[in-house]
Amino acid sequence: MLSREENERLTRVGAGTPMGDLMRRYWHPIAAAAELEERPAKQVRILGEDLVVYRDTSGGYGLIGARCAHRLTSLAHGVPEPDGLRCMYHGWKYDATGQCVEQPFEDTANPGARFKQRVKLAGYPVEQLGGLLFAYLGPQPAPLLPRWEPLVWGNCVRDIAIAELPCSWLQCQENSLDPVHVEWLHTYFGRWMQQRKNGDPDAGSSIGAQRMRPMRHLKIGFDAFEHGIIKRRVLEGFTEADEDWAVGHPMLFPNVLLVGNEMQATMQWRVPADDTHTYHVSYYVFRAAPGAEAPPQPTVPFRYVPLMDERGEYLVDMTFNQDYMAWIAQGTIAERDQERLGESDVGIIQFRQMLKQQMELVLDGGEPMNVFRDPAASEAIALPMERVKFGDRTYLEYSPAEAGESSAIDDINRVLATWAPVREAAH
Image 1 (cartoon, helix red, strand yellow):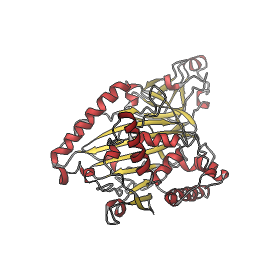
Image 2 (spheres, helix red, strand yellow):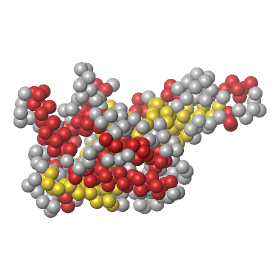
Image 3 (cartoon, one colour):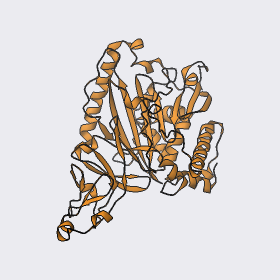
Image 4 (tube, one colour):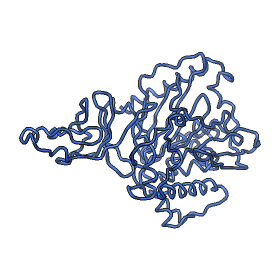
């Protein structure tokens, strides 16, 4: 367990805190790019700061302070122009750096004044990649945005699911270093919930649980590597020769999990909105088989995931929602000084140690891991991914070698058809 003081250091993310300074060294997703096609300005909260992200009429993006410096109204209602965002209240305009560039009445009343030059909001760089908008809130010069391999795959379809969680980012990310929860939360509990719901003792709990048998974990392992920690497991009936152990899948420091294979992948970002809230992004990528062509996707669809039903009960039919429930149920910030860790928690302990090491590195003036300055090192970053997961070869259903070239496109179309009613209901 951690002391209260250690827990504070690991969970407080405001400016000037050790963890806040560490997290500001990274690019974080703050919105789906398609959100700004529907409405060009949106208020966001990241690392304890209230900001507005907008798309100007030239196609560029800006991320600036949430309120106009004049009378403090929200710029989320601002009007985008070719070179910035104009406040709808009195017409003050700001560029992408947060600099005020126009004050219509003031400019007319006193043409020689330098008032607008003295007015500046916070302003941070924004980049679009793979249908997501990423922001960097740290010191300049900004590092390169990491181009993790699934973000830059071609000939594929993508989907973005966003959840706003009332809990610290850390308990979300620690879940990535906890393999054993799969057999209990996603299998045992999931099937129990389905039995309660449907009266069917044989029903699987979710898409994820239907793909795995209720096997016990016999062995778990965690190896630090250049981008984070590789998580491994041996399930009952399998050995270290199987891919769950021999390959494993990575937790990308500090707040990303990657699961998948060369034909499909899921990335999850656990972005600290503030100390007690997390902006959670699940990013799905499905590749068409070689020789097949993925359906056109002019924009990457997005959806916000509901956490509870109309009765106020958690929606736990889906695997990720089971995770959300467990993380939120730990409290807004888990009281780690009260926990009792065991052998199944060695990955969590290793991750906390890595966080402490990287925080100290930043405090000493260094750059933490996964901060990229060399374009060659940040381009299409390849990562280990199991092709056969949980011993289930249907996990290869997108592979042409296993399922035939036509099956990938058929399944992609099926997935797109599933998204359509979800998107329509959300709008």
